[in-house]
Length: 194
Image 1 (cartoon, helix red, strand yellow):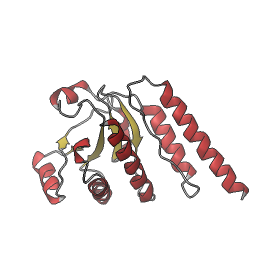
Image 2 (spheres, rainbow, N blue to C red; image 1 turned 180 degrees about the vertical axis):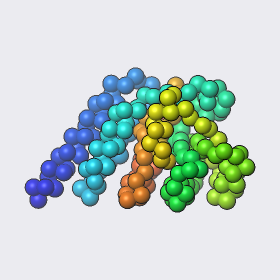
Image 3 (cartoon, helix red, strand yellow; image 1 turned 135 degrees about the vertical axis):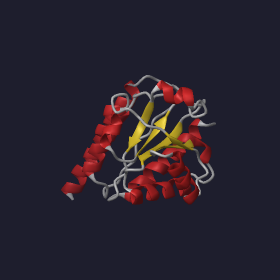
């Protein structure tokens, strides 16, 4: 009982701390969200989530990308799923399935930033997975976009000012948290698109 209370207290503390940090960020009329927790969630996962968002929230997408793909940065935030063809293919397929299931009526606010050596392979992936949302072949420079150093698929919200927030690296041990994250982001995006 005492352990459960301590875990709950730590989760509430980290959630509150993440909220305060997000409040300090430059205001852009959008409200970043945090993933809500329950006692079954891993404290290690939340620490990783907190550290990742603390480190990368406010990072800007390189201007060359937004200049080349102007339709991405509209007047509302969008969810980006980033992966490379070198990443775990089973993980990518699970995350794409989550995206398709959760955002089936709201696919205009989703973009996939993939990296393939061949455009042909990217289009084959799109066709095989019957994707309705745009998939772009984009190579990030790790110096300009340091989150790439993790070499794993991840999600983030991209705002019209080219800044990112709500970074999330899915953990295959916690697929229910990936689903929870995406449902919370769907709520955020539907609120900000009105």
